Image 1 (cartoon, rainbow, N blue to C red):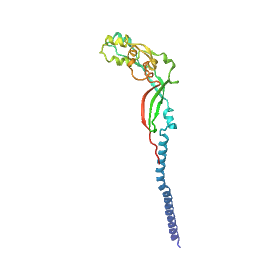
Image 2 (spheres, one colour):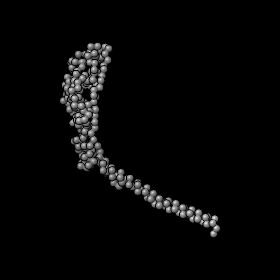
Image 3 (cartoon, rainbow, N blue to C red):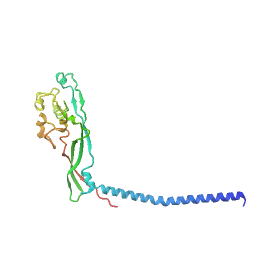
Image 4 (tube, rainbow, N blue to C red):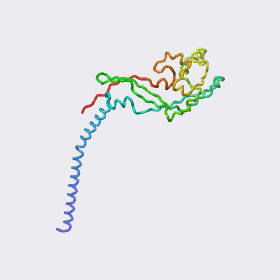
Amino acid sequence: MSSNDYQYYVSNEQRKRRIKLCLLEALVSALFIIPAYPVSICLKNTLQTHIINSVNLKPDSDSFKLWCNPPITAIMTYHLFNITNPIEIVTNPASALIQVKDTPPYTYNIETNKINIHWSNDNKRLSYVVQRLFTRDPIRFDPSSINHTGVFIDLLRATFRTQYSVKAVQTFYDFAGMETFYHRNAVEQIEGFTSDLFNMVQDYMIGPNKKKSGFVYRQNGSGLFNFSIQVGKIIYI
């Protein structure tokens, strides 16, 4: 065999080996890839079913306990609008413009729980009441802010004022108080305060915590909302 024939023979054998190797690699890959697709689909469905059944609300289950008392505390920050030129407005109402300045932030933690929980006889329907508990944030709430005072916009009084013309008549002051502006404590505006107007409408107010007025007071520790939901069905595979 000549050297040229030998080189041709060797090259041909190497080419055949490479082809066989490629075919073998393709076959091995196919053996793994082809069954992997249905296995992945089956595994996906199994995991989804397991997750859905795990979070499904059932009496005394772990998911139900977490749902009743979520381990999450929301943070709410309140600012009040302080009127800084009340004397100017009273003495020169025709030309004076109301000047308002935001107060520093008053920060509260809010825990939301479910109370008055009732299951239907077949455990497929659930009714409950949402309760929110407000507490001063131990880090963000400045203790000295309990002494903040100012002329704050009273939403109840402002709403009542809209029923009268540009110049309020004596009847408005008889009901809402004789002063045009009142200096009040800032934190009490949030956590609870009373006024002449509030005392007048107190018996007509709807909802919990009616002894005082206040953004936080009316909601704190009370069941604000009633819900009834249908619990999801257990999925079988």
